Amino acid sequence: MNFDILELIKPSNEYKEQVMNYRKVFLDNNESFDGCAGLEECNTYEEWIDFENRLSKKYGENYVPSDVYLGVRKSDNKLVGIIDIRKGLTDFLYNFGGNIGYSVIPDERRKGYATEMLRQGLTKCKAMNINRVLLCCDKENIGSAKTIIANGGVLENEVIDEVNLTKSGTIQRYWISLKKDIQINI
Image (cartoon, rainbow, N blue to C red; front, top):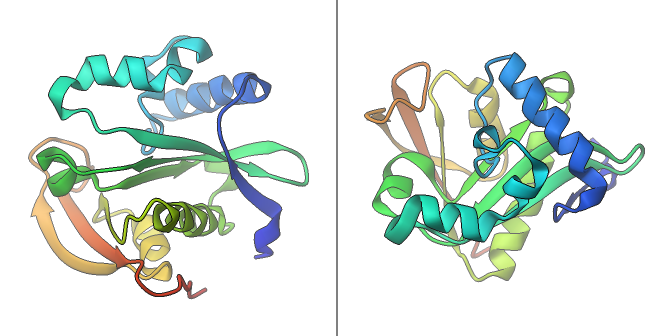
């Protein structure tokens, strides 16, 4: 993949229609909204983009600030994915969610976008002095596991999904160390 064709950008009104279409596609296909900062719960773009206020009220003392980015293909300015970089770990995130969540719209999967989004997200983590990143995925989500491994992820363990986040009932927990230069294997 030519990695200069995708960039992570902060959500703006320019992408309002695409974000709401992303939501519709995920709802229509019964997809998991991983890394979407609660997009499934929001009826309007304005409600969704108010991340700090909305999510801090929802999670209270368990709220962890995060940065949400849109994965946008440069050639046609198309939203292909969303990634959420959490700046800390609560007990819940440590056990089941991780520092980063991401998703790619179904018609753009298996094209390397998730791998590139995660690579760029890890660069942002490194800039925030987050030197060890936890990523979690459903044991049956082979694509996500491959994406994490391609970005240096090392499987620590598998845990029973006590919170019903997965289809398989098992969550894989991977760690990525950012102390060295980030390298991906494709």
